[in-house]
Length: 205
Image 1 (cartoon, rainbow, N blue to C red):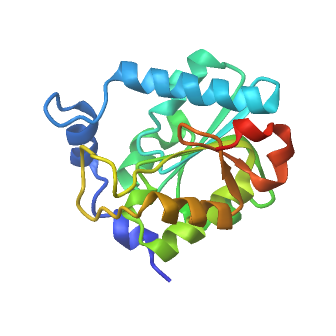
Image 2: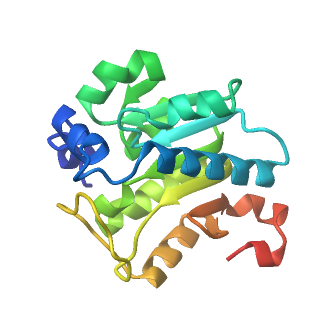
Image 3: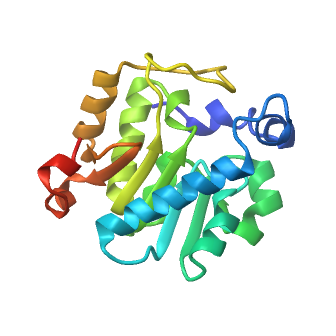
C-alpha cells in the first residue's frame, strides 16, 4: 500500500504554497478564479441537495483557501480541511479547521460521517492508479450530496506543478470513479451511486 504521507510531505512546505498560489509567474489561479470555483461547487451541491450546504470536507486542503470564501458565501456552513502538510496545519489548522491527514485517514477522522460537499483539488493526479482508486472509494463513502473532484486526463493540457504527475485516459478515470461508487454529472461534479435517483437521466454524464 502506498504511503500517501511519504509521497506528499516533502512537497508542501511554505515555499511550495508561495510559488504555486501566490507568485505572479507561477500561480495556478487568482483569488477571483478560486471564488468562482467555490461558488460553482456550492451552488451545484445545493441543486443536488435541494437545500443550502451545511458541511464541506476539503481533502488535500493545503492552506484551506476554500474556507474564507465559503464563510462569506455560506456563513452557517461548517468547513473541515484535511492535509498532510505540517506547515499548513501548523499555520492554518486552528484558524481554518484543518487537521493533518490524507485520503487514507478519512474513515478514522470522520467515522460514519457524510458531508454535503466533498472537495478534492490537485490531489488525484499525484496518485498512482491503485492509490487513486482507494482514495475515490474513501471520498464516495464520505459524500452525502456531491463531490467536486478536480482531475485531469492524459488528453488535457495542464499548468503548474507536474512533478510526480499521473494522468490516465478519460475512460480509465470514468471506470475507476464508477467502480468507486461515484457517478459523473459534468464539470468535475460527482454524486454517490446510492443518490443517483436524485438526478434525471440527462443530468448524469
